Length: 167
Image (tube, rainbow, N blue to C red; front, side, top):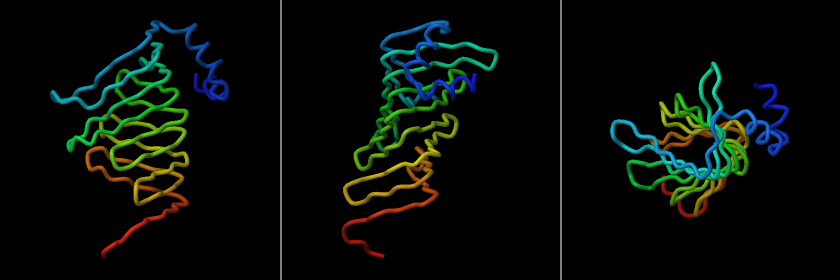
């Protein structure tokens, strides 16, 4: 499956057609909410979802998705992407294609963003840009912890901070 995905991922339309033909279940206008200990952690909306079952587990292949991550401070983060894969057993997922993650203060842009549900961590190993009213950073890799709201940037990090800074 991985080899086929890598080959077909260069042609997303061919990949989606292949998935549709092998899907156990296809759903239009999917709406799903993940909760833990009675608290909403995220809500997902997708134009379509195709459930694929295998011995390794169950995946939902998503098209035109948006996700709201609920944060303690109510400054929720909103993600949009062209495509995604949700691991139904773990609630981990990968969003691909024009990925944008926004909160009231910052926006992150990349081509692929992964989410580890257990630790509530978003990360990308592809070049990413973070921008806000007073800053702009780019890096080869980024990790963002939704619990602590801290970002960690690695690899060719470049940035600009505008305004007065007191040390």
